[in-house]
Each structure stands twice: as structure tokens, then as C-alpha cells.
Length: 118
Image 1 (cartoon, helix red, strand yellow):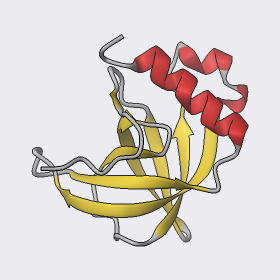
Image 2 (spheres, helix red, strand yellow):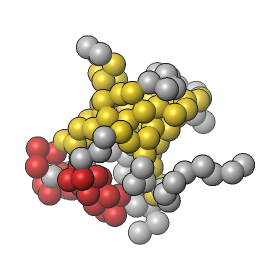
Image 3 (tube, one colour):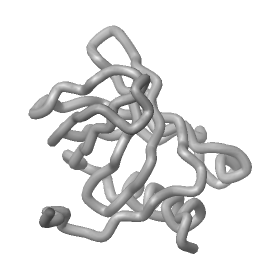
Image 4 (cartoon, helix red, strand yellow):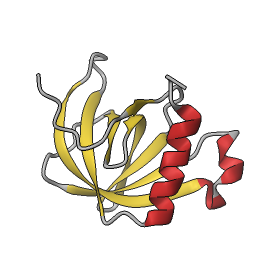
């Protein structure tokens, strides 16, 4: 299978919590891997492909001391969603939209700290 990602991804040692906002409702998910252009989420519900979502990353301790407010907000487009190995979860691949450079720098810092291959 050909990989269509524009940048290399890193599998994370710790899965930071992510809130996925669906209008009024927030869905709790976890970030499984991360790249400069997108993120793989593990979710309790299937995300709808081709839909934009607002995400808020909850930075895990002890790394939260280096993140103002310990939360990062950004928008991402769901490119695909499928059942995960765990039958109670779904995987979703999202591409970042309108990413502020400071937020992207902080996400890349988190990737460096939590990269399972580091």
C-alpha cells in the first residue's frame, strides 16, 4: 500500500488526550501519531470523512509545564476513518487546516518529546 503522507509521522509513546468538537458536543480521543501535516486519532466514535473538526490537545504531564495553558487548539480535516484493532475504537486520519505557526511548533515539540523511536 502506498503511503500518501506529505511528511513523516511519529508514533507517540504517550497518547495525549484530544477533544474533538462536534458542534456543541466534545468527543474525547487520543493522539496516536503526529506529523507536520496531520494526526492519527483513536476515537470512541467514527469521525466523518471530509468534515472539518476543531481539536484541542490536552498536553500530558510532565510536558504540560512547558505549554502555556496546557492546551493547543486547531482545526483539521478528517481524511479517513475506520475501525481500529480494538473493537471499541475507531482510527481517524486528519490533516491540519489553517495551522498557526506557534501551535505547529508546540505540536512538533510534543512529537520530539513523545516520539516512541526517540
